[in-house]
Image (cartoon, one colour):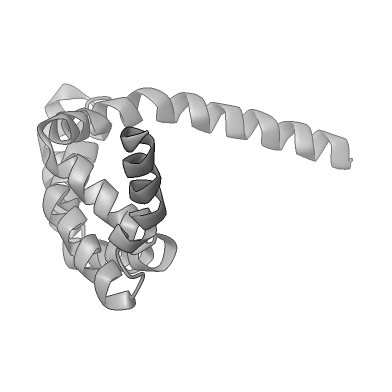
Amino acid sequence: MKITFIALIALLTLPAWALDDTTANREHEADRYLSATPPKEMMTDMVEQMTKNSAPDQRDGLKTLLLKHLDFVAITKDIRDSLVKEFTADELKALADFYGSPAGKSAMKKFGAYMADVMPNIQAEILKAKTEVDRERQ
């Protein structure tokens, strides 16, 4: 009976443990998330994966040029603004907690390779669907 009572009290007070969903809290948690998953590292990894399909003698030069011309400040600002707009403070806290953890950091290091694996198929499926849409419209 005591365990049930304690569980009920814990369940009823759970909303009290939630972060206030204020812009300031969203911004703070978005910053924590961005510290755990720096956009520059993510974009560098994506460029690395993208250029693997380039000719070996052009790969390093292409990677260097892409990274030279990417505006990491603008990308980071856009990501932060979107995080604050789309997620609650609690959701951002959960993301920051996960991606700041050893498992989250390990998962994030694999994300570029994962995206490189799936994007060609996703793009092909989107093009196939667009072809079907165009065919139906005729």
